Image (cartoon, rainbow, N blue to C red; front, side):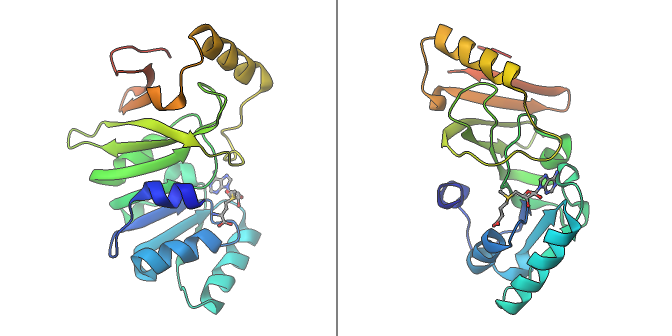
Length: 193
Ligand SMILES: C[S@@+](CC[C@H](N)C(=O)[O-])C[C@H]1O[C@@H](n2cnc3c(N)ncnc32)[C@H](O)[C@@H]1O
């Protein structure tokens, strides 16, 4: 979580959407950095959401915790300067890109569908609505509900990574357009998936 927070480049006053509230601990850190009024967190599990909501209140960080599927983002609070996902994914839902302002960033730990390190992906949303960025380094998180990967997929990804000469994860990147996403090696025109 510290590595993700560091990569987030968060400044006071930025609007942040966290996906995966869990205990609320990371939401409290986000509130400390950006201000509780600027942080919204979405949690799928209503029991966890309620517990985190109360814990955040008690701790003096009254973050808005919404119960719902984080793959939809949270439109009422958009646009965000940052969307940070504290669970892993392999596909960027269009809602995350649509709800991030141009110049804003999306941070998402990536399931091992391209590199075995579960690398952290940092995308910047451009003014043309396309999000693009590279992987930064290992950040294993439990998967988002609905974004689990099976062993066959991860085995095949590892086989392709080995066949490519085991490139460092920082050589891989992702481009997300309204039509879908492309994974690439070294540059966006060298598409691998
Ligand atoms: C690793 S935990 C997050 C840790 C949390 N940020 C903390 O500070 O404790 C992942 C959380 O994501 C939640 N989650 C899984 N799928 C989700 C989804 N589709 N939308 C929202 N939350 C989801 C899980 O219920 C779990 O609480």
